[in-house]
Image (tube, rainbow, N blue to C red):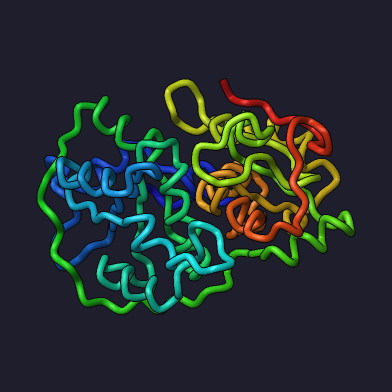
Length: 310
């Protein structure tokens, strides 16, 4: 990947499979041992089958790629009042990124097979810890395979580098802050879950269906083109315009079921030229932990309904 062009969010946030293959070297054998200017991370995961992502990785991954498990690596254990995927402890992240060989200047590429819905969590966590050179593989593993590029079953050798990042480089709002800001009309809360879940028609994961009153539905699947690559920055800006109109990025917050796919929404907004949107890490699964918090279903209090992307 060539150095990011100033003012071109796509080149600073995404990499094509062709550019990644060229960066990894002859035969796409993975980064050269010892230098590791590139670190590739496989983020595949299935919420309903938590071991399926690791099994898929072991069955074949981009050569040289590490595996980051959503539950074990990219989240803290859930607590009595938290959502399903609390933010991990910074020390846990430092240890993980050090083992991967990520240091200042290391270029990180994250991928999944869910349209960035999982790999964007790693992108967000690295940015939260102050590491800027991280991109998503546009089109994910499917694009890599469709290009006829090889897979490997070999695991990389753990490294002993020292990742020095500190948290706080991406904005975060927690449940009490979300409730207060909504009461004051101070934020625009974007829920990126599928419309059916937002409206409370189905709920395959959490014990309560519906959405936070005042939230707007902008399903994350709508950020993708038919080939599962991200839409152009221009198309994304047009898509989000009705939802962010009159708001600065600091006044916009993305949420989902547990703070994971919300990161893909934040990523898409950055692609659209609006970096700095906040994450609600607890999201719906934390909001409903208290029966005192209001819940809406259907279209009442739902504001503008988002495009489903279907």
